[in-house]
Each structure stands twice: as C-alpha cells, then as structure tokens.
Length: 329
Figure 1: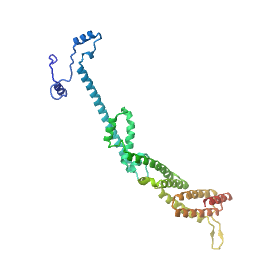
Figure 2: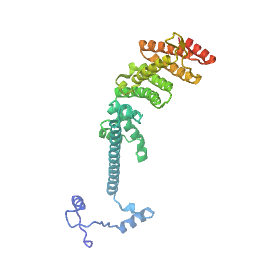
Figure 3: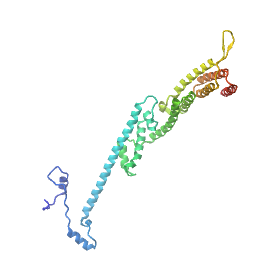
Figure 4: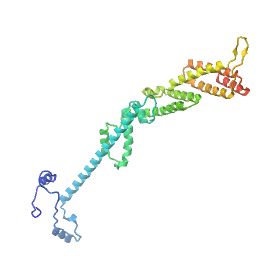
C-alpha cells in the first residue's frame, strides 16, 4: 500500500520485479527527503540539486548498472551484426555455387575472382574474399572502427572465413595472378565466338591458346577451368586447311582430254584478298601448335598462294601475293 512503507530485501525486489510470481504492480515510487536537500543546500551555498540527495553507494551502483547496460547493448548489437553478416556471407556463397551448377562448359557471365575460386573448389578462399568485402561494408552499420571482439565473433561464427594463415594467403595471391591470365584468355575466347570474319576467329583462338600454354607450368589445377581454346583452334585450322585445298583445286589450270589447258577460274581481287587474309591468320595461328601441323599447314598455304596467282588476278595483286609468299617463307 502507498500509505505504509516497509523495508524489503534486495533479493525480494529482484524476485518480484520479474513478474508472473505474485500480485505485484508495475510502477515505482521514489521518496524524496526535501529537508535533507534544503539542509545540504544551505550549508554549501549552492542551489539544491537532485544529485545531492543520492548516497554515494547508490550513485556508484547506478553508474555500474549503466555500464552493464551499455555493455549488454553493445553485446546485443554485436550479435545482431554477426548473425546478419554470417547469413549474408552464406547467401552470397550459395549464390555463386548455384550459378556454377547451372552452367555448362565454359559458358557463364561471371568473371569475378570469387566465381573463379568456386570453379576451382577453393571454398575457404572464396568465403574469405566474400567475408572481407562484407567486413568493409560494416561501416554502414555504425560499427566502431576498433571492435576486436566483433572480429573474433565473426571469425568464430563463419568458421575462420575472416582470416587466413600465411600459406593460404600465398595461395590466394597466386590464384589472383592466375585469374588475371584467365580473364585475358576468356576475352580472346569470347571474341573468337562473336567474330564473323574467320581470320579474326583464328587470331583470337591462337592468342588464347598461346597465353594459356605460356603459363602452363604455373597453372597446375587451375588449368582445368580455362576454356578449350586449343581444341577449337585445331578444329578451325583443319576446316581452314580443307578450304585451302578446295581453293587450290578451283584456281589451278586443268588439263582437258585434248591435252590443252583450260584457264583456271577467274578470281576477283577482293576475293583473293579475303583468302590471303585468312592464310595470313592461319600462318600465325599454327605457330602455337606442334611442328608437324605447322609444316603441313604452311605447305598448303604456299600451294594456295601460287594457285591464286594463277587465277587471273591483277598485276598489282600478283605482285602483292609474290611479296607475301616471299615474306611467309
């Protein structure tokens, strides 16, 4: 009752304040001794304040309770950030894994380092990169710059995704370099698939194959995720060689049953220039293949050049073909 004041022990206060145990109210009364406040004010010559009526041990207890409350709030905020960050980390990683499982061969639209690591099954390194980016974004959540406890909890909750040992760090640095090579190879490979001109296709596939072979010793297991530029280059070279054989037959004078010579098919300068452009690209492309293939294709190219010169082209183009033949040999 408000009319009768009785002393209670601290244990009883804490027990009753939790609720659900007895018929207790949900408000608090504070009794203020005005006579003490006035007396202290008159002795000091200052205006009485509420602070003066609190005993020292109560002030310390309130300050301690406030510090505890602030720590609880920071701990709660820290846990919320840890839970949210780890959920986001897992969602991003699963999205990468899902996109990889939905593609076939080398056709994909994600050229990020994270996706590259997923293809190599470097789960820990991939998760570390994702975690590092998430850690950088925590500034938006008003996280103190030096919250070591937060970093420790993040690392524990994410299975050490936020830190790497020295060997893992060295491996990541190596794969970053491999990834840069992979990007250039992919660029050449994709250009080969979008180019209309056959000469451009050969050049792009040859560039991709050469770069891939140039770094073969340092690629290791990473070589498995590179596009099959070498395989496709061989296929395109075989196709081009068959076309050269056809050209050679079309533009070589033929012997008739009367033992006289029929004129070869007349070839326009424009058509001849297109054939020469393909031959030039082919001669460059075969340099990245084995010696036998290189010699076989070079011989066929020279035969085709001589057939083009016999096809009735203009004198100026004939001179150009002769210079090209001399340079190529």
